[in-house]
Amino acid sequence: MSYPDINIPTDPAAMTAVQLVSAYAAGALSPVEATEAVLDAIATRDPDVNAYCLVDPDRALVQAKDAEARWHSGHARGLLDGVPISIKDIFLTEGWPTRRGSTSVDPVGPWTVDSPVAARLREDGMVFLGKTTTPEIAWKAVTDSPLTGITRNPVDPRTTAGGSSGGSAAAVAGGMGPVSVGTDGGGSIRIPASFCGIVGFKPTHGRIPLYPASPFGPLAHAGPMTRTVEDAALLMDILSLPDPRDPTSLAPTLTTFRGQVVREVRGLTVAYSPTLGYATVDPEVAELVDAAVQQLADAELRVVAADPGFTDPREAFELLWAAGAATMLSKFPEGSRERVDPALREVWAQGDAVRAVDYLDARNVAAEIGITMGAFHTAYDVLITPTMPITAFEAGHNVPPGSDQTTWPQWTPFTYPFNMTQQPAISIPVGTTKDGLPVGMQIIGPRHSDDLVLAVARYAEHILTP
Image 1 (cartoon, rainbow, N blue to C red):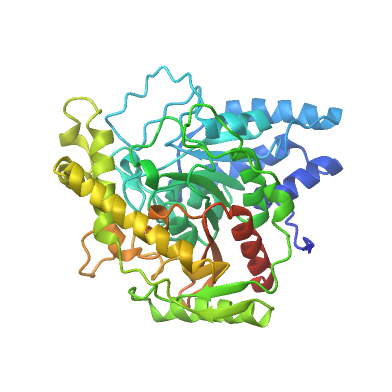
Image 2: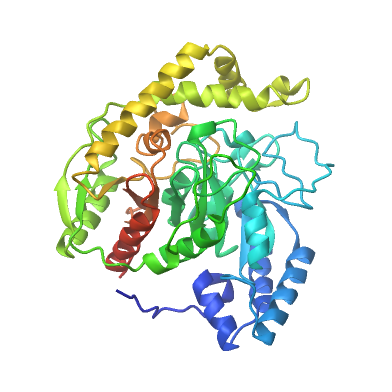
């Protein structure tokens, strides 16, 4: 099954990674020209969005010139050689400070180590544009911090880009780099992908190696943030290469994601759960996701209404999350408690109070949901839900203004359960509300079925694209 690309933009800053590589191979465009176009877009658009906390034009252009020479010689280094990319300011990146959105992290360094993510991208020949914003230690589902201020949604700068990978989502959605890499410990890739109208993929835990080890432990994932599912698959082939520094990383795959993304998926059985059995969803969001699922049913996927059968695990998730945050923050310099985001300070105190027995009880909740989902997927190949029950709300708030909510997991009930189960999950855009705000649909598969999730998402993307 193949899907022809018939709408190729003329502006390099608007091209996908696949389109850029095709243009490089044809000699129609050079990595230098593409990088210059993206840097111009950053200079023009980012003052209104604040997606980047660091931009390094000099380094980017040096890398682009090296890639240009490789393409001219007929020896491209990797799959996405010369494609511009941004990196969330959580990943160690040699030569750049990794401040994690915190004023407590000394920018002086030295910064001499690449994380596995940065190392694989560098080995492939990709062009590093800069680092994208994150809330402090990536702790919440919107993107603002005492260090970098508020990151806004390029679709409507009055609204939040979501988080914690909000800078990456805003960069991709705003034409300030075709692809990025984010982290996801409770929805941090999928939430901003939904709010900004892009693709965000959280693979199976361990599929993308991490170093240093995340204090959020079994909740922590990394993944691609892109404009198309095909671009996400290509990035997965790069990012999922093994790294000895992560003892939890998975064995290499036996096939390629780029080869599997167009596999046949018609005839699969899809469970559709509009609420997971407990969430309240905005009517416009529900209508758009319902319509998308109906189109998939009309396109030869067997869609069955079915809830997985677990209750909301938010209490257990928030305990695990607080414990992880406290673990990281306990290693910060003296005086940091007074400097951190005030709401994070409260989470820090909650994490300090977590007992080992309570932590293990919460881990048992996660295990039970994992068992439930394992059984569920013996009947259903994938599960579809809304990604978010709401659209992007006013920027600068941790919860929707006017709501009675007090913590961010209260307004993102569809994402964090699948960090607890470590399953692959992707958000793809399915339309916009009458106010023009994007809505995302989430596709979840069994653990280790990353290729299947990407293939179903690519088929859905093809069906739903006008």
